[in-house]
Image (tube, rainbow, N blue to C red; front, side, top):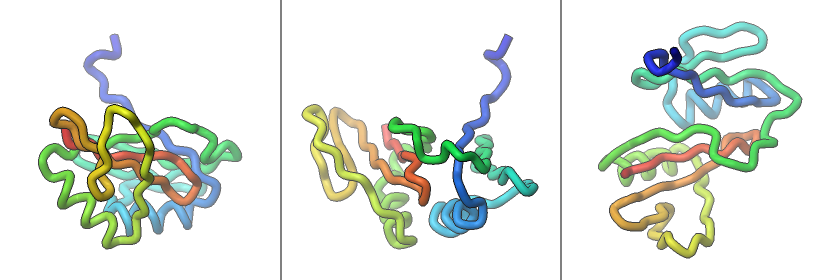
Amino acid sequence: MLKDIEPVATVAVRDLAIARKFYEGALGLTVEAENSEVLTFKAGQFTLFVYRSQFAGTNQATAVTWMTGKEIDAIAADLKSRGVVFEHYDMPMLKLEGDLHVADGMKVAWFKDPDGNILSINGM
C-alpha cells in the first residue's frame, strides 16, 4: 500500500527561526511552505518537515541522510564553508579522512543542526 508513496522526513526543533537560518543558510534548502509550527523544505524529490517540538534533539541516531554520490567531497567542503561542523566518530570499520568517514567505497559525514539532530551526507 505505501510502496508507491514517498515518505517525508520529519525533524523536531525548538525554535523555527533558528532552524530556518540553519536549513536555508547552511544547507541551502528553500522553504516551500510555512506556518507558525512547521517549515516545509524541498530538496530534489525529497520533502523535509521541520516542526516545533519540546522533544527536539532527543534522537541519538541519524535523522536525515542526503545521498550525494560522488559529489560528497565538494558538498562537504561547501557545507564546511557555510559553518557546518562535522562530527568525528571512532568507528572500527571506518577510517576518518578529513571530515569524511571512509570504508569500502562508502564515504559518509555526520553533522548536527542547532538542536542536536544528527544529519548526514552519504557518498555510496
